[in-house]
Structure formats: C-alpha cells, structure tokens
Amino acid sequence: MDLYTLTAHEIRDMIKEKKISSKEATQAAINRINQVEDKVESYVTVLADEAVAQAEAVDAKIAKGEDVGALAGVPMALKDNMCTKNVLTTCSSKMLYNFKPPYDATVTEKLKNAGTVLLGKLNMDEFAMGSSTENSYFKKTKNPYDITKVPGGSSGGSAACVSADEAYFTLGSDTGGSIRQPASFCGCVGLKPTYGSVSRYGLIAFASSLDQIGPMTKDVKDCAMVLNHIAGYDAKDSTSVNIEHPDFEKALTGDIKGLKIGMPKEYFGAGIDSEITTAIIKAVENMKALGAEAADMSLPLNEYALPAYYMISSAEASSNLARFDGVKYGYRAEKFSDLLDLYCQTRSEGFGAEVKRRIMIGTYALSSGYYDAYYKKAQQVRTMVMNDFNKAFETYDVLVTPTSPTTAFGIGEKTSDPLKMYMGDICTVSVNIGGLPAIVIPCGYDKAGLPIGIQIIGKPFGEATVLNAAYALEKTITKVRPNL
Amino acid sequence: MKITKEEVLHVAKLARLNLTEAETESLINDMGNIIGFADKLNELNTDGVVPTAHAIPMQNAFRADEVKESFPREEILQNAPDSDGDGFLIPKVVE
Image (cartoon, rainbow over all chains, first blue to last red):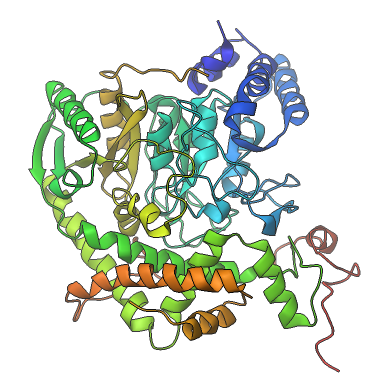
C-alpha cells in the first residue's frame, strides 16, 4: 500500500494507533513529491529536511507518551500567502520573493499546536488574484488530471498538491472562489467557511471584507477535521466572530432526510456547460434518494454579484497593496532618483500585470468623482444580493449550484482577455459577497475525464450542515484518481 | 465605457505605478471593458439601499488598552531592503 494515497484522517488514526510513524507518513509524501512534482509544480517551497526533523520530533514525543496534539504527525502544506515564521512566504510575487515573516499566521500556529508537519508552501496566482494560477511569478501549476490544463486559482497549488497526493491536506484562501474553483478543477474537496469563522491574522490581505481561509482535502471527513482545528475566535483578527463552533467531524452523520435543497435557476442556464448541469442535477437526484427534498428557485440578482465583486475586491486590493513600497520588506528597485521614485519603481517592477490591473481598477473606483458610481453602488448591490440569500434561506437549508461554467481549461487559453477570465467566477463570487459558507466536492467527470465540482452553499455559520450534506452525497459518487 | 489615456495616467499616478507605453495602451482597453462591465450595476435602482461593508454585522471590536510585548527590532528589520540596524533606510527626503 502506498501511504501517500491515504486521507489525512486515516494517517492521523494510524499514527495514533502506532501502526505507522509520522516519519513514515512524511517520507511517503516527500517521495511522492520527488516522483510527480516535476509535472505538477504545485510547490513554491518544499521543506523536505525540516519536515522529516519535525516528524521525528513528533515521533519522539509519542514514544515518550507526551501530548502531541489531535493531528499529531500529519504532513500538510500551506498556500504561500499564509505567514510561516522564518519560512519564505512569497504570495507568488516578485514583490515578496525574499520575505520571511517574523511570525506565524494564526492558522499556521493552530496547525502547529495540533501537531501537524509542514511540508512546504504552495503556488498561487500572485496575491491571490486570478482563476488559473497562471499569474504566479514563479511557475505555472498543472492540473493533475491533465497537465495541459490549469488547476484553477487562485489556490491552484493547494488543489493540485492534495489532488496529486503531494500532501495529506492543504489550506487555501478564497476571496471570490479561490478555494472552490480549483477544488472543482482538480477533483478535491474545498470549503470556504463563513466570513469570520477562521482568523485572517497572518493571511496576506487581498480583499479584507471577502477573504477567508479554508481546508482543501481528499475527502469530506478530512475537511471537517481540519476545519475543527482552524476555526475559532482570534483576538488578533478584529473581524473574527466569537461564537461556539460545533464539532464538525461529529456532525457528519450522513443523514440528510428532510434537508431542503434550493436550486437557483440562474446558475443552471446559458453559459454553463451542459455536462456540468447534468452532473449537478444527477447529484441532487442522489441526495433526493437519501431523503432530501429539492426545488427550483431563483436568486435574481446573481448576475449583478460579479460586477459588484470586481469593484469591491479591486478597491480593497488597491488599498491593501499600498503597503508594498520597497521600504519595510520584500523587493526594492535597484534604480531610483528619490523617495517617490523608489515607491513607483519598486511597485512597477515588483507587481505582475494582473495585480497592476486590479490596483488600477480599484484606484479608479475609489477616486474622486467615481466613488459613488462604482464603489458605493457595488456595496449597495451587495446589500441587495445578501437580502436575496436571506430570503432564500427562510425556505431552504442549502443551495446547490455548479462551481464553474466549464471544467479545467487549457493553459494559456484565457490569458489574453481578463474580462473573459473574470466571467468564469460567476458561480462563486456571490457567496463571498454574502459571507456565506460553501463546500465543493467532485460529483462526476466530463467526457475528457476532467472533474466536475458541485457547490453546496449554507447559511452563515452553517458549516456543519453543508459538510454533512456533502458527506452524504460523497458516498454516492465514484471517485476517479488522477493518473500521473 | 471609454477610458482615456489621461485617465489611465492619472490613476497610475495615484496608485504609485509607472506604466510603460505598452502597459498604458492595454490598460486603456482592459479598464474600459471592465469598468464598462461594472456599469451594468446601474440597471439596479439602489435609492435608499444601505451599503454593506462587511457581510457579518459587527460593531467596533474594542480591546483593553494594555501594554504588551512587541516584536524585537532586529526581527522586524531582518526583511528590510536597507537598514542601519536601528531603522529603515530611505533616500533623503528633507534637505
């Protein structure tokens, strides 16, 4: 048996039962990285020696009978926008090519305390802006199901890595679909938690009112397990919400009798590949066979969520990215005439084309004379989109939709037209606008064998409900592994 | 929506970006398309709608005003492109 194929909860249990050591689990993942990483290119940084040393330390503690944490010895990897103390954290940008944070993000710290082993840092679209991971300064990650296709983005490295068995689980971040769309493209499980569920402290900000960190895993049980360890109030993040979270792993009963599913018709119409629509409808049939009830309904404002999202996220990005000026950390231009020129040259050389485009759009939307027409207008539309959701959740427990209009597209296929790339986010952005939790799991494969992801959206703090719905559905789906 | 070259250059100045001629040209086109797409929002009547900044309603998150340990100076300066060991070094601003 190849250890690397196992899920994170299986590895956790086997280490706990002393059937394997953490070092064996870690070595198996590193061997797998050595075997397929040339093709997949999901990592920016691999910490092979450090990971083995960490695993040996966990094993030594287990041998002595010490408390080692609930995820003791489980090897995992993090998206490269989450701070790791003294470990390179680049955001896949030239701007942070040499940045070693002096502190751990709260998620990093929590996973450390749970006993996990850090295998490395994962590739992404620069500053999490993109839907294909083609905007990385360092490399283009490939889809494990077909290496001529993109893995999706912006957490493309996190999705490809876990899908290719190069880590037992990973974390991604999601501002407009950046966990869910790559999970869909790479056939893994991805959850965007409710805004405020997981601390953003130490997550390099893209759009602060939309960003959330979440698990990317091999199955739904892993997803619940990881969420248990990263969710919770954090005084260091003033937008983190202080509520009691249930035990998400225990919430997985597989019983969905009477679950009310809404299927918003705006997500099933023109523009969505028919193979995808068919697969989603079939998945809902499977859930109905388990006792769930499903009905067609409407979220009429969905088409306005996309332009509202691009105004809000770009505006927040232009403000957040003002801090990168070549003074305190990261890249500094070699040639400049004075302080202002140092700022301008550093930013012009340090940021890639997509990041500059978003900064420009955001600065425009916030500039004098346009603020009301674009930024304020988008925030008003946000209110209306949220009201739509609130109304829907008076009747339905969850909403089920496609994740992306297409399966994974070819590398280079959409890079020439930014607006065309943005249109691909039509199924995911409204969830961030509403701050809602949503999970994506594979529910089928297209004719070319590429995964199709189904999205299950829940009420605020309804993670346990969407996880359990996904858990029940997962049992009815035959998973096909990538052939690398 | 038409974005002019002057607008692109003005916004670039606000954003502290120096654009090449080629970047300017493609931004005239891309920003025109993207802002034009955002004009779709005008189809909705938002009179009297309260703007939402955060999805989860929350008031100011206050904390006790206590003195806590800060990062050691050398750890913070470790990432500085230029430093004299006490602070960040930048080109002279005041004559």
